[in-house]
Length: 103
Image (cartoon, rainbow, N blue to C red; front, top):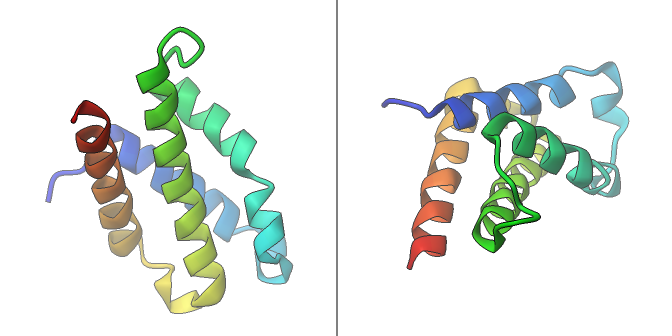
């Protein structure tokens, strides 16, 4: 499967969080607290202008939610911390987000 640069970036973001020593002591509220930072990192990477374009804001929110969900899953199930699974999950989230926004 071919992965988009954004899926690779988001996977990297996930591993940056997961590999922190403090991750195993985090709770789900802590993960939810990363939402704004993750949104900004994705926006920066994607070079989007959500202030000017509603669709871009929606897309960034959908992708951010996908990253947050992956982090929740990884906290619940340490065996989910598989790069192939995370890449595929985020690529799927990006594809669905695009299709949802365009239709």
